[in-house]
Amino acid sequence: MSTVDSPTFDVRLGERPTTPSTTYVAEASRRARTRAHASSPITSAAQGAPQSVLDVIERARDALRPEIEALADELFELREEGFDEHRSVAAIREVLQRHGVPSEANHHGLPTAFVARTIDGTPVDPRAERTGAQRLAILAEYDALPGVGHACGHNIIGASSVGAFLAVLEASRELGEPVVPGEVVLLGTPAEEGGNGKEILAARGAFDGIDAAIMAHPFGFDSIDHPFIGRRIVDITYHGVAAHASASPFQGRNALDAVALHYQAVALLRQQLYPGDRIHANVTDGGQRPNIIPETATVQYYVRSELPQTLRELSDRLDDISHGVALATGTGVSIDWDPQPFTLPIRHNRALGERWAVHQASQGRTVLDASTTPSHLAASSDFGNISQRLPGLHPVLKISGEEVGIHTNEFARYAGGPEGKRGLDDAVFALAAIAADFLHDPHLRAAVRDEFEQAGGTIDVEGFFS
Image (cartoon, rainbow, N blue to C red; front, side, top):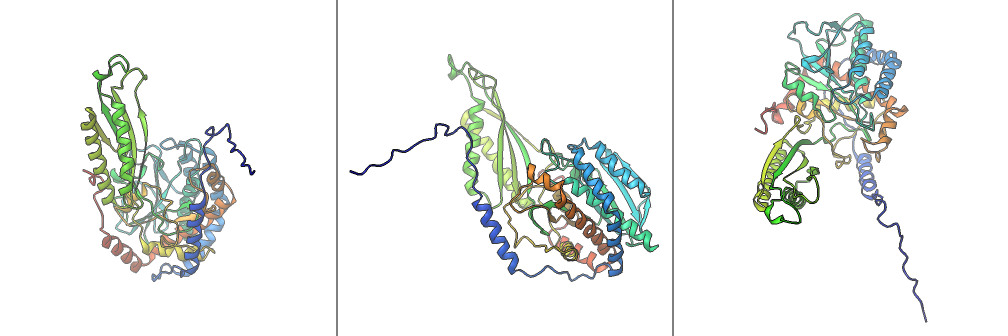
């Protein structure tokens, strides 16, 4: 007679969460590598800056390397959060001062925003009158995340932008003539992580008269146009009627029930979302005690989409659900959109991106585009709002393995380690080289602007959801 072993059960079942599978991420990475291997290198039809200019920029980058690496390390250790980056800004301004560059903090009323300028390769007072020259802005970020510090690599972003700005300046001093014929603006933009400092600055006029804006973001691979999708925040509060949950529940109108129903309705909506759309939530107020039917309850959502127009559509769907749930539960509802400025998707400029790929190739990197890289790793950035106002470059720069997610302790280790230093070095050169390309080559500037206009031109960011 055969016997079957009785099943055994772990008595601790449910004690800890299960480990998420890596199958999907591994397969997506494998497919991306296959596509990348079969793809042709990204090239540029633009002439850009003369090679002699690029050579002197590279020498300036090399001379600046120890100082810029030290700045990246200092920012990493300071790990200051958004709108509180006072010591980080002071460290950056000290580096600028050593190179004879005046800077202005409290730019447009933001204490941890700053600006510095060069015109025709010469530092000028940030408050000096503007000329009619072409103007390119290099944007610096330097805020950290709570708990995990620089797990998004903003120490690399801030130091690379400062390094690129100084490389253009020092190259001009070596040549004894301007490396770039025009104006380069170094703009310090605080609180990208949850504060949308760039949008605050833009709304106050900080980007008026800027012809293009550039920066680079550390990541798990190299790409000129990785998707950064738009994001809005909404607080949905239901207003009910309090009652004793045991003695007289029929006298109440349960605001928490409305929140629960809303959460489920949004969960059902996910099946009909556009590919790439994201909605995630948490309940920020669910009542006081279980024996009191909640009079108020609030759920907060992050709502994300790949296009400004589809973000607006998705916002409208949330509004409809909110009112429908209020009717179903006999509650009232208040809907508070954008408690902080929203972010729109990044509109990548291919003409600028191709120059980035060319310059990174000279540093030994193979840069890909969205057709060959995993597109599911989508987050949001306040650079999106800038890119909808004027042409922008926001490539991602490989400093870690593809499997390492940003906003993790592991990515922070890369941002503070030797891989981050190599990425910093390559970003300094490429950003400075693109500044030279843009300000030297009128045909590149025309191509950049034409592409921007063909994609819809400047949109009214502030009034987009009105």
